[in-house]
Image (cartoon, rainbow, N blue to C red; front, side):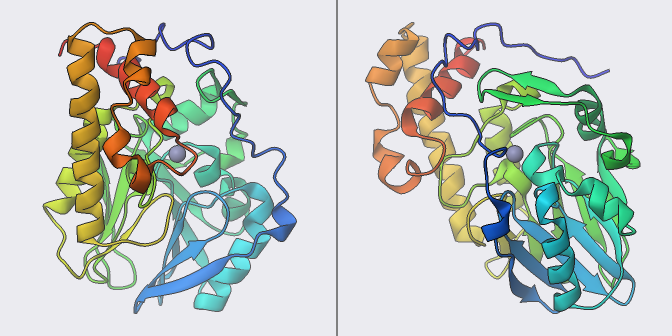
Length: 304
Ligand SMILES: [Zn+2]
């Protein structure tokens, strides 16, 4: 049994006034799925929500994540256009709706859904996430992963030995990274945002220390030619992942220093500890003040 951490300090009052992750209002009819080939048998699909990985060949098509349900017909068309093989598997990198939203449609199209144990459990439970002002209903049975694992699993498909491996809680507590050794491509899910501060979903068990560890673990096994698919942002490489890792280490140290001085949340935010990184990383959904608040919330609850 994995202990479920709770964050009493992370209340709506503390992080009040945040914008909602406004998926409900989004007009998906305008979204185009753009496909980019990264290797003989591996593609990335950009649309709305988390980036999708595709490995397609003689054994069939394997998707890594499937964005939002309304996009499923477009995603299936893009999968077919890339390489006309039947869809057989989806691996979810974590349980967020912009990564599992198409699960039900993909299963109906013939895919077996595969994910970490915690993804299935969190989808069954649903969540009222105060930080991001997002209520997630329990998922229908047909959207749930049928095959789950707690450490890693290997898919021997299309000449690949694709390894889906769990990392210690980072973006959430059910994160999985998918490594395609032959194609030399890795899909990092939301443990990697290639151009912005990442979201750390503390209420789903996420942790800055896990994000740092996950990026270090991937950096240790990839080379300069490896294509690195982030959960959000364009495809990157080892150097890009290294810059992200260094940023995470830097901002963590800057916030931890103030937490150790027993500064209040408001004082830490006012001190702008992320300032040196904001120009490069602070212009996405995760704004500097919010990122600082989340780091403070986690670090002030730890023994530093
Ligand atoms: Zn996510």
